[in-house]
Image 1 (cartoon, rainbow, N blue to C red):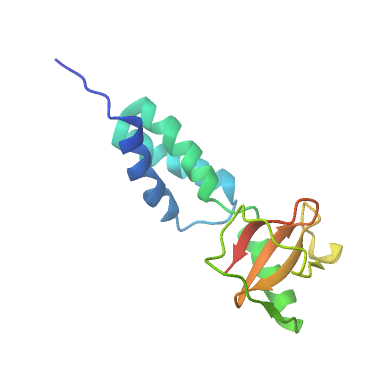
Image 2: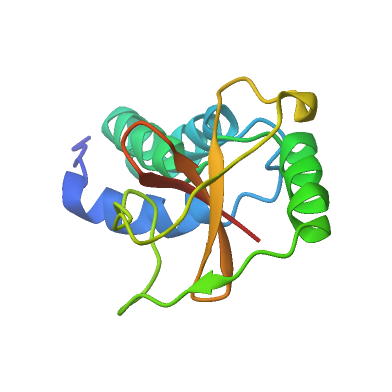
Length: 138
């Protein structure tokens, strides 16, 4: 019996959209990694599990569902102006210095000290040390 492994690029092309479809965002990147590994294993065996796990972790957010809800509630109570940037807003994108960052209070119970801002009418969670977008708050 012959076994053929799928090309890792093909597995990634299949696993990334499938991992993005994970509906349980309760544990962020951890859930994405597990879900991606499961989907990848189904599509491409052991190699697919490895690629899918990495893809799923990338897609998963940094906040749990409960943390995201607390952040949305807090940000909704604030009135902050939106900064207009050319192009799409994406995770990993550094923000220019003209984009003012607003710290999130420790009372929200986040595990990391994040800031936020509004870019192109979207709330984004930002690492204040690097000014990179770490999550887009839907």
